[in-house]
Length: 286
Ligand code: PDD
View (spheres, rainbow, N blue to C red):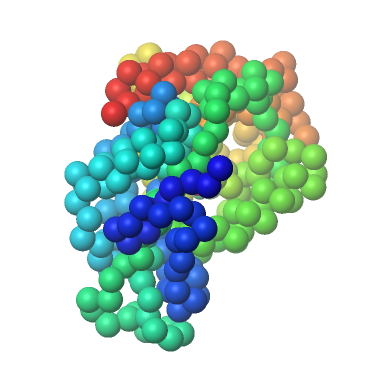
């Protein structure tokens, strides 16, 4: 069945939603995005995603005059129109239609292109991968150096996922200067005893909304947090590992570059944090 999507103020059947061939998002990858998770028809972490969207727009000097209340209304209307229970809402803002290909930004006042659509993932919180844990390979981090901005420039992330798939694994961790930066579409963590180690925030990684909440919950659960870079060797010697993202919550990792972690099954801390995070997210979803 065709979805109803949002494009520049209109709700349209997906086949009718058209964007110009001159759109900066299409020609230059000049666009930012957010993915907000939906559980039981409600949005999780909405405020966090909107705050990061505003920051991404600001960092790229992009303007979009949609207020938080309006964003919320659009998200809710799409969920309702599409009868979405579990999944997510994808949002993208581009620098608009420049009228021709040009490296310079289009003139001030050129309207942004705004697209939102729902993606249905029934049973999202019961992903069977969380029971077995997933396996990752490492690949060099060849992305640009403003990974803190959530741009649609996802080609290397996409290639990294394909490399993992070809290797018979589930995902890839990026490594730069000998240290893990983040996963192809998630933030990553290792666990040693009661201590969680995860890379500190900087321009080197995306400031995950799930990361922020999971670290807060981990502190409340009396776990120790160390925010610093770690190596693949350190991860291979860890008790457990996991990643976080809006669409996967807390996902246990059981193998890094062919080496099993702990007993090769999802670790105690990862499993507990996943439970706490999903439970809390459902409670505060709007
Ligand atoms: N990806 N790091 C990268 C490179 C990401 O693409 C993502 C999210 C994260 C986790 O951020 P958050 O917890 O705010 O989802 C970290 C989304 C889910 C995606 O591209 O589909």
